[in-house]
Image (cartoon, rainbow, N blue to C red; front, side):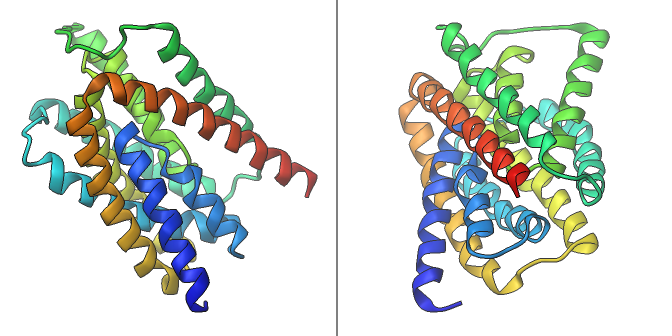
Length: 258
């Protein structure tokens, strides 16, 4: 790849990951389609994007670690519930034809933004919620399903985790985004990257540029989310979810026409 496309790829990665780190997901809105438009097949683009997205989690972790916003018991629960789903989804997607999974995911993602917008006070304050063992099982099952989506479909699944942490576990948007970026961005995506890297094909020559954009974007976006607080994050989250959903629907339509 010549210098100009590499610069363009870096800028796209940087911008996409800044918004993702601020809103708690959605880096695939720009980065994943860009890889396809620049010539990669769907499966190669998915594996390459998944590897690069690990740097988003690393960059965000470097910033959020200093704030001490993570709940360690909840963090371990998210990892234990989600990582098996990520590995399963990454293994499963290599044999699933397009575009129907993206239609479903696109509609669900738009519904997330609409739901958050309708519920004006959702995620603005921390709420203490104790569901007991049955509630924990439900929470873990949903995280497992989100993990499957995370491993199989590149765009927007971090947004699902962010909203689930707000709705079910009572976190505000600021803390939910912190957990999503560190645990999903670093550990879930890391598991998916390893699985896809072993089973699929990666465009390794593009990875360093994507890693740099993701690392810087993750740090900058996390810094802004800490400064702005939950209300600003909620508004950006609602916009990003709708945009991600529309992008997924448009990509599914293009794939169907092809």
